[in-house]
Length: 132
Image 1 (cartoon, rainbow, N blue to C red):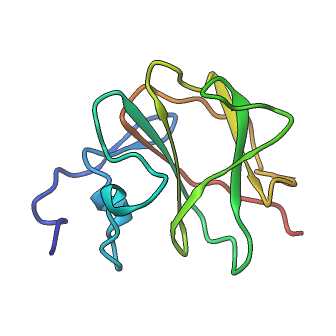
Image 2: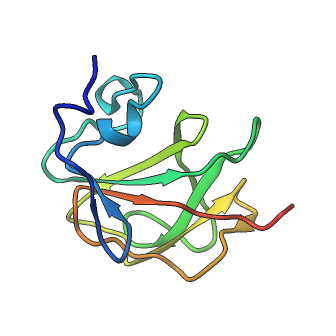
């Protein structure tokens, strides 16, 4: 199934990259769909997805900490891995994170400022981590 030819082109914003469909990011190379993933809500009205595109190496994981969306600055929530460089965190749009930051293995903070969502259904970020 080739979704790239039937999907709208990606739009960029200041805070992240918004997608008209998650398949543009999530199905490249391995045909992964959110609806088929356990513990990940399917694209539905009222759900927002943070997508981190970063390859953190075998055995490592991306976490998210913050304020709002059941997040805490003290303990991270693991993001769901959809492929070698695709990580997703889903939350209801009525409880968006006010601020958040990605962590490698819930120990090493991503480089840069805290992030915030733009209110769109899908937001893509490209976190970078310092060498460990």
